[in-house]
Image (cartoon, rainbow, N blue to C red):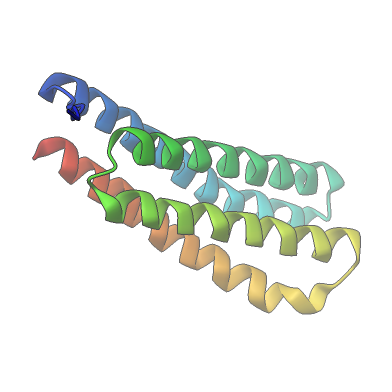
Length: 137
């Protein structure tokens, strides 16, 4: 006999709230990436390049945690964790390109780095809206 583990409604709502909050935090960090990039471009400051890099790492970590939590506890909402995984992968790719731009002076990658960052804003926004809708359903 197999048993099916079900999550009670209050628990599912709480978990969805956590997922929404984590994706919202990751999205906020992505928005701040643009602010920090503007600061270091304007002032040619290594400090702000470092802040930009640490912000990228934090956004990857938070998005990854949200995606794992969505996969683990909200697996029936496949679009949420699949898009979450894509969001996390895009953030990793953006950070990798940013590292190449900074460490290897490959400024030719900026026209790829920036549009990918814009795409990550769209993915992050979709995730926040979608997870919020799931939480209200």
